[in-house]
Image 1 (cartoon, rainbow, N blue to C red):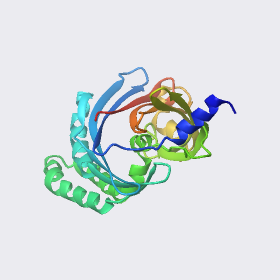
Image 2 (image 1 turned 90 degrees about the horizontal axis):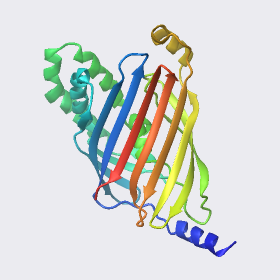
Image 3 (image 1 turned 180 degrees about the vertical axis):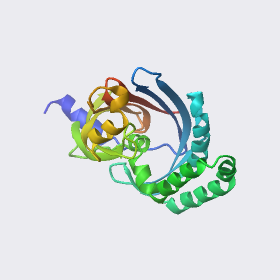
Image 4 (image 1 turned 135 degrees about the vertical axis):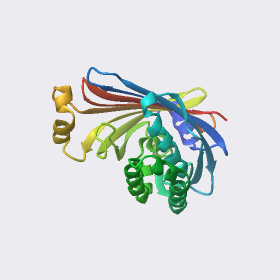
Length: 283
């Protein structure tokens, strides 16, 4: 083992994944959806996350109201409801696993109580204006009954709390993480399981972890769902694919400073969904 290899291993052994107390991150999400030869729908939102680390593996997140930078005007009524729904999870208390992924949502009861209050105070008015809102509210009622599993399966939370390898004596610069399950965008309600691999780069004043993900399996019969919902409009066969790639940058203090993560889910050349998550440390 030469001297440069010894230095490299020592540097990574010194790496201790950390958070700044009350550190704030901008969370920018930009998505693009095409359907056949018709109009593409492009959306861009931004919110601020304040991270409050607590005792061992406990962490709290305070999430600001979402700012809509770009959106389809026809979707405005839906986003107005979604904004009210999201207020129920604007304060999250989490217990992390050893690998930095979410182990438990500790304020689950408080979230459900907040949802009941939002229904009573904010959404009741909309229900009286338009009865069709009842169906949406009923759907979210069911979602809040399994809020912990939904948060764990939410891709944004999975990206922010991405697995991290052990940087101790057996640290490996390249490797893979156990499979994770998230929700499909193009097949609503269906789950997709993906594998990810990582590779570390060491630079002068920062550490960078590059990750790649690929589809492993999925729930439901995608061929059958495609035939029922999309085949007639698109008129070409299903060629489902999922691609993920991301860059994680950690500063000299071992604090996460930036994530750029791209996801591409496609049915075929006529229908695809591309999303870019850009998360950046502000303070």
